[in-house]
Image (cartoon, rainbow, N blue to C red; front, side, top):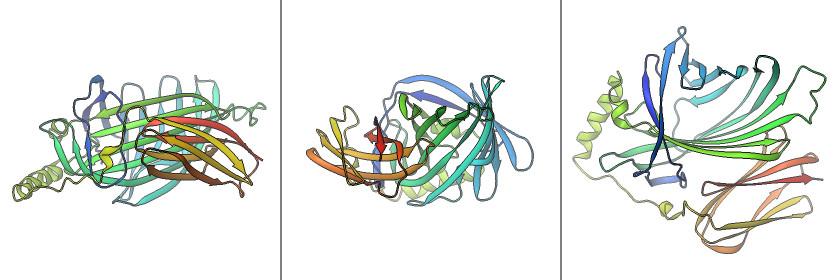
Length: 336
């Protein structure tokens, strides 16, 4: 995990679909075009706190024996301090383990505008397998960590204008691939969707890699020994590369169409598929709280259904957020 004194280079590459969850997955992220690169550096503040710097922000962290938490961040436009810090990573984390945590903080935008941010983070080790970055970089024993962050931002929180009509929502899905023997994720994808009072504003998608050769030059004797031992073990046999058919998912045009139908406090997502796809749907309220979450994988076909039980929910406006093989769909719906 993050260590004070480290400096690393991340490359931003063309976005690629993260693939399905499960065991013995093969991810081929080779031959991706590099779009940009930037430096990350970490320095010590005190025994348990340190800061991270990139080209845009300064981050303040707290590191303990069982977790890494974000205490706040600052950029030229905004500074945020968390009264309830954001959980970044629990320790240890093994396949199928799930952690859920909430957070809350106050910020100052452009030096004059106050805001309050709060939400929920879900962290899950959802897949393991082999990651291919290039012809020479094939990394077995890779664990994928999936984080979904649902956040609400109340603007002018201390003024008389702090009504429910001035709220922004952000839904972020973050995948990180941690290869055995390396401190930092060797690959990441981020999808972030922004809403203004539940009306979709924009969706941004990015992918990053931190090459193994970059991490091998760090002062990291523990992971260096792990890499040496793994090479010795590998010489005695090949690793299992069964993909469990996860590589059959189409990461290009999802060939997805859908409609919503309401029936007796239930919302049905009725959809058609032209290609195999993994469907991840969430029902989110104006405060960024995830009330329902459904996932399923289907082959090409018509008339598939996801049923969302809304009988216990409060009346109001919600977002139906749907991720289909990395492509985002959004619909604002009323629950009556």
